[in-house]
Length: 135
Image (spheres, one colour):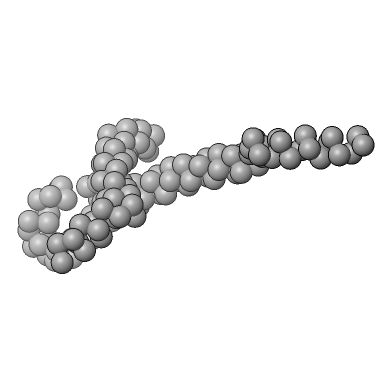
């Protein structure tokens, strides 16, 4: 059973998937920081200082706080500003992945389009063919 598990765990697909998940998590953190620290402040400045992350609708009369974190402690809130930020994160991640996959596809097409250099055997056969044509 241990040998089967080792064979399963060390297969190429499982290792590739693990690497992809780890890199994806790190990439998600980078994009979240980019959206939260770079893009949303610019959007806020353009829109007159709006901070989308604190936009919410209270769903109970108990909620009187001005910030989302405090309001969530007081009761149920509809945090649509946070939803907008997460949606923007998703759009950016999807767009970057689209660009990466598109460029990888183009590179793969270029490599497929290049004919492989003839092998030594093919070169010898071509020489024999050419010699036979001369006779």
